Length: 390
Image (cartoon, rainbow, N blue to C red):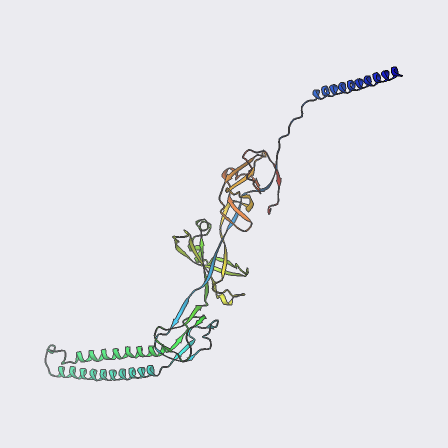
């Protein structure tokens, strides 16, 4: 029995050794086969980049700026003479519109009427005195000729010449006094000097006004003006001032808060650069602002936009194509990344417009739409045509 157990143990050990030998041999064979295979070439990594194919074209510059609407004229209306308010127009209230020449306030004028009557009386007396002096002068000249004396009299008084000049001066003085009295009388009617809206009323019926007392604040309604500061780059993209003003260059205005739109024109251009902002101002105008639909009110903050001069050999690119460093990346014909620095000529909400570099003017170019900070010049890439509006 013991002899059989020993024999089976020997058999088991032999089988284990044999299995191990087979496995070892197969491993050696597999390694030799693997070593005979040629090494696989490592493919270089070529990341995909979204590109947009562009070519130089001609575009009209688009100029944008912001400003606040202001009236053409703003006036604090004052009394030019003294008196009590005996009548006041119902239109003299904030928000009401008045026409040029409308009587807004009537002052008590009896004293001024009396002054005009006195001036007319004085003028009549002066004219009568002048007629009497003219008759005296004519009679004196006739008597001098009848006397047979030769030459001129020893004194101008003989021919009444000084008396006549004094009478003429008295008439002129009386006429001036009448004009002054009538002007003072006319000033008892306080009128609007232009078509306007009443911003504020500062007086009431029955109050007594001194000359110089403020009675109302008026804003003219003939036009609205907007002062728009523009950079040197913007001015370069505009025609000269003579063309801008002489042709009433069209302008579009849009309310910042409500996006309402109005049409205007270039009115004038400042002839100096602001010492603080280093910008030059363009003034645009909207005629008859209250007749617009909707009305354009003073104090509205607006965005101003206008077309500029035509610019040739320009690329139109999405805003995203300009990197934070002010660089444009593009892909060469060999699918190599390259770049150049630039500054947009002008821009809008979605696009920038730049000059085409001289070395790239003869062909269309693949522009990288979304450049990354990890890009390096000379990098191999795989261009993928993207959406122009991406």
